[in-house]
Image (cartoon, rainbow, N blue to C red; front, side, top):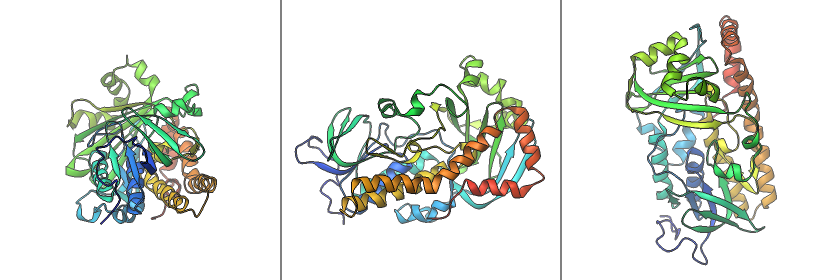
Amino acid sequence: MNENPLSEPLTAPLEAPGVIYDVAIIGGGLAGLSLAIQLAKEDFRVMLIEKEVYPFHRVCGEYISFECWNFLESIGYPLSDMDLPVIKNLVVSAPNGNTITHALTLGGFGISRYKIDAELAQIARDSGAVVQENEKVKEAIFDGRLFTVSCTSFVIKAKVVAAAFGKRSNLDVKWKRPFTVQKPGQLNNYIGVKYHIKTDAPADTIALHNFADGYCGLSQVENDDYCLCYLTTARNLRKSGNSIAAMEKNILYRNPLLKNIFSRAVFIYEEPVTIAQVSFTKKKQVEDHVLMVGDAAGMITPLCGNGMSMALHASKLAADLITAFLQHKISRQEMETAYGRQWNGLFAKRLLTGRFIQRMFGRPWLTNLFIAILKPFPAITAYLIRQTHGEPF
């Protein structure tokens, strides 16, 4: 049994003298939760701070590559006991409806963020981590030895801080990270929209349907529901009078496959989940001595899938190095340098491929041409898929 004295929710003031956490994790998505679980299992004092309250929906394609299966089970997530849809095939359509189909060599499975995040949060608590919900981090300041992490209703001290707050946060702006001050361009200023629907699409297939300046993914998750999630530019929304419904009818429906999906689907929730100001430009993996994990460190374009797998794998990198630092085996500088090097060694090529593919999609004539060129050459499609997936870890 874990003897960590902080394994139960604290009732005393969190800023009480003498309470120093080994690790504070900002953000409770896949990267933050899996990192918290790994470190808590090592008996470190861990606090994870999440601004929402579990369970809740996130904008996400909700497909995880099988490269993560063993890792998730190793941290206590019982995938083998779940009847989740196995995804083996990929279908990509051009705006004109032309399609290519290809088998996914490794494949993956579908699961909603509503389900997996909440269940990982409970595993984190059971492992001894303190999970503070409904709290927003205002700043994290390093004094050369410890961090002071200031939240909405408390302040704590921590030896290490990891940021796993997703695509964009108030701390990104506070730190003036480059992507927050760039002018809108081809790789930033996107919006994401997600629904859960009922439909009759193949359960073993993830579909990516392109339209002008965007693309929409469709894949099954638990309970025979489907995740329908698309990414497009803020410009498309403005052109549609800032109406999501109008944008879908005026722009997405020009792809006949998307028109058919939207017209026949039963939408489970009245309103979609949305996110704005999404950027795929390069990011640093360490900011002001804070280790960036998951989308905070770098985002692969959703057209390539697998961002969830990258978040989970990055948490393992961070956990191993944080453990070595806290056990006095490496210095803080060595931890930070090794994390950036290893992260880029694993993911830089994936992100580069993602940015290349991203540029091939968006303009209808170019996307139509690209799909037409790929169709007779499945080996090229297989190569691109391999570049955006990793090996089991």
